[in-house]
Amino acid sequence: MTAAATSTAVDATHDSRLRSWVASAQGTRSDFPLQNLPYGRFRRARAGEPWRIGVAIGDQVLDLHLARARGRWGGGIDDLLQPLAAGDLNAFMRLGASARRMLRAALSAALSDGSAQRQLLEPCLVPQADVEMTLPCAIGDYTDFYSGIHHATTVGKLFRPDAPLLPNYKWVPIGYHGRASSIGISGQAFKRPLGQTKAEGDTPRFGPSQRLDYELELGAFVGTDNALGDAISIDAAEDALFGVVLLNDWSARDVQAWEYQPLGPFLSKSFATTISPWIVTMEALAPYRTPFERPAGDPQPLPYLDGETNRRAGAIDITLETWLQTARMRASGEPASRLTQSNFRDAYWTLAQLVAHHTVNGCNLRSGDLLGTGTQSGPEEGQGGSLLELSKGGKQPLQLANGETRVFLEDGDTLILRAFCERPGFARVGLGECAGTVLPARS
Image (cartoon, rainbow, N blue to C red; front, top):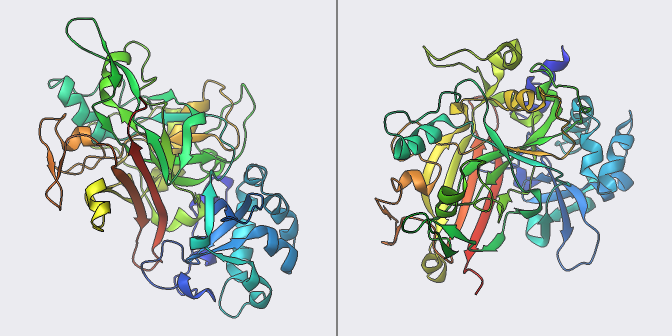
């Protein structure tokens, strides 16, 4: 097996017949069956303990600090657990794909029915309901791409009906440098941003954004570093990535419209970005890989963005959803209402291509760097990954299940992203939730 194939290969840990002694990991609706095993950083609520790394299994968290101390680990697994037991996910990420696969196999065996580790590890489980989560790792840099062609086309039509896509779109993965300091975990609440927006003529007004929006994205975490001046090839890019999360790139559309020329988004994006707390590893996604194919008549990627593994299995079948719970829904005990559903397999650029392009000029990525995919909209009507699309640029209000309408987000709104992978013959794997709530602007 080549190094480039490791993250896309299906092995014994993906067997749908595997069952865990953790009862809640069974069933078709759990996001975290034994076949998933995502990583996150947590601590017991109100316990005053340090943040530590855990693995989600059913509705529980396996505390890897305790698991290393109590379990019986051989074959180098104890060494792999050392940085995780110390609460340093970045250090483990730097060990690379082979280390991830080794520990995944060991954890899968330890948590499987009939495991001799059960009695030792049961005291290491903590109910997810009893923990608080934080960012899973230290995020040094954040780059947001624009890989969703259906989003790019729909938004482009609002401003350039005759030429919605700019000439470079099908040749180069477009991105901009975001703000890592304002990235928060699911449950993040943020104040409506202030900024300049266009008024009459060329004189702007200043005040709270009136066109606050969300963006349905995935985020991919870089696992291994590359040296400044070196590039990560398309064939090595899969193993350079650690895993994925859901990502909401909150956007102040009116601020963005005024500021984005000539250098792109700035204050319209930097006030908040929310991610889901559990990193689903690239290995867990292996069964849901699909071929990467360009539509007939579209240009094929340049050679540095093209490779056999990427063509065979570069795309990933991940169903993506957005849900909205307004303040009125919450007050009356009503559940969130689903706005849209799309799929990451429709992205125009793969995760491997994003990595290869980001580093082709010698840019050095570091463990924990976060790459946003850009908004992932579907090809059909009503599959927009943002309110800008769903409301036709603010011209057509959306009717919600409780009779309320929305053009853009209002104070008190909670926007929830969800995602899952399903394929016959394999377990359903989910990404958890990515939720954020809009608070009133500061006075």
